[in-house]
Length: 359
Image (cartoon, rainbow, N blue to C red; front, side, top):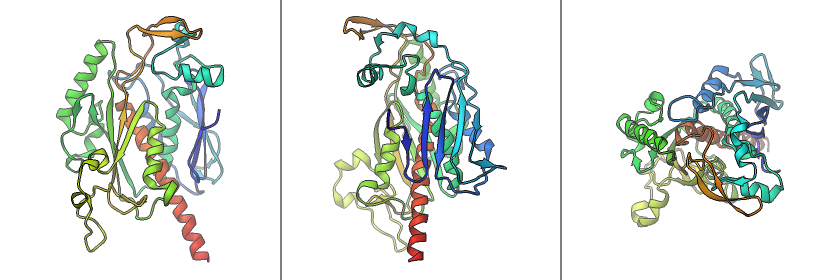
């Protein structure tokens, strides 16, 4: 199975399955001498872990990270950083009923057809459990680029949206409620809606908005390695993501160029920022903002018609511990993936600068 690594210089390779002994990863390309704040890494893990509130899966995982290499006396050594996260609350018997059943909108069918074998326990490698490894790497990436502010928040759940631009929101309130929405009134409505959906044995989707501030000018490469294309790839690699837009996004397609163009100020900033902080695939110093759409979680607590591995009609029973809405727990994952992209381009700029100065 290929496709388990992300990044070009600051790279992350992950391994493990949802119901295996452990998951983990290897971070390569992290410069030597970086003093790590392990409490900050743990705080990021606590934001993502299951069982943290009444509106998420009640699987109990402490998600403690054990670092195996690449760190000495609290500092990175420049060698690969290996880490492990033990799985301590697997209930594999919860999935015995789907051993030969393809759950609707899961990876069961495609994994079995592609590989001829699949780990049916919680989805195996296709499980969102893998994203814990991304949060570890993202937490380290954030410490590599501390001047860049990365804030993601839940901007919609189902048809409930924040009706304010991000400039009017107080990001310090994101962690003030279990939905991770910085608008308190909207957060309350979202929470009530998720709880009602859960009572129905159903699930609901939503969106996460992410804002990147103090991004230096010049991150991103022309043509195939544009900054927004790498951010899009990063976000679309997250489980359950169905869409990505940055800047004016799809709404920009309805505008005229005379309204959409960002006019320059004399200092190089722009009067508007419909470009979303990126022009020509390169950061321009303005805020970068984007939105990520998550589908409803595919596992619902209702029986659904499906087929089995022999092509016979079957019933997929709704069992196990699952999120009724994934977006609150996905906020730190979105931030982590954004940090990985930015750290990668930041290191690339440093290498290019050294080469240019050396020549």
